[in-house]
Length: 370
Image 1 (spheres, rainbow, N blue to C red):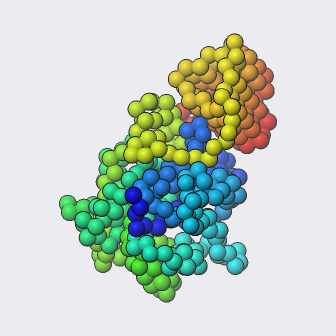
Image 2 (image 1 turned 45 degrees about the horizontal axis):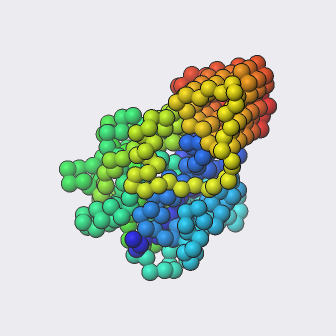
C-alpha cells in the first residue's frame, strides 16, 4: 500500500546525552541490538507503512549517516524515484548551526513542494519502536485533526529524556512540555507528527516571518489553542534512547524473546545495512548463554547476558557478562567485562578486568586501547 505521505526524519538539534558514544557519530547511527542503528526503526516503520519518499535532515557528524543509508537499497527506497534524500544542514556561516529546524526546512522547501503527496510525517531517530503510520493517518483523518502526535501512555518505565503531554478527554493535546518539564501525566510524545503538507509549509513561513525557527516550540506549542492537535496512542514497545541509562536498559531488554519479537517483526520487519559477514565461530572453549551474537564473531570464552556486534573476538578464558560490545572489539585472553559498553574496535588487554553497574555501565570509547 502506498501512503500519500512524505517522510521526514529530523536530526536537527536532536536531544543527545550519550556522551562519548556519540562524539564521532550522530545519535541516529548509534549501534543498537547487535546489528542495527537507531535510525533503522523509524525508517523501517515508514517504509513498511507505505511511505515511499523519505528525507533525512542531517545536522552534525553525519558521515556515518551517509555511509549507513547509502542509496536506501536496504530499505527498498533505491527503486523509487528520489526515494531517499539525505539533506545536509543549510549552512552559510557558523551561526546557522544554531538555527532551528524550521530554518533548515525552509532552505529545503523545494523538497516539500515537489510531488503530489498530501500529508507529511515528521519523526526523530531516537524512538525505538515499530509503528504503522497508515493507522496514524487513519486516526488523523477520523479525528479531523490539524496535527496528530503519536504518544505513549503508561510511560513510567521510560528512562530516556522525553516530552510529557497533557491530553483532555476528547484526545486533544492541551500542553506539551519540554524535556525538563514537570507534568505529572504519564503520557509522552514520541516526537512523530502527521499533518497536511500545505499546513506545514504555512507554519514554516509564518513562524520564520515572526522571527521563530523551532518546529515544536514555535510552530506547534504556540498554536495549541488555535489548531486541533490530537494524540494517537501507541500500544507497542517503546524505548526512548538518548542517554546512557536508556541505551543500556533497552539494549538488555532485547534479550527477552517477547520484546525482541514485538519490536523487530510487528507490524513489519526492521531493516538495516547488510555487512555481509560470515557466520560466527564458536571454538572449543566457548560458552554462550542468553545473549545476542551477530555474524562474524569468534568466541573462545564465556558470554552471558550480553550483546555482541559483528566481528567481536572473545579470546580463550575471557568472560563477558551483562555487557554490550560493538563491532570488531577484542577481549583478550582471561580478560573480563561486567556491565560494560565497548565502542567499535576497542581492545581489552589479557587479564584486564573492567567493571560497571547497570545504572552506570563502564564505557570504553572507540579505538582506545584499554
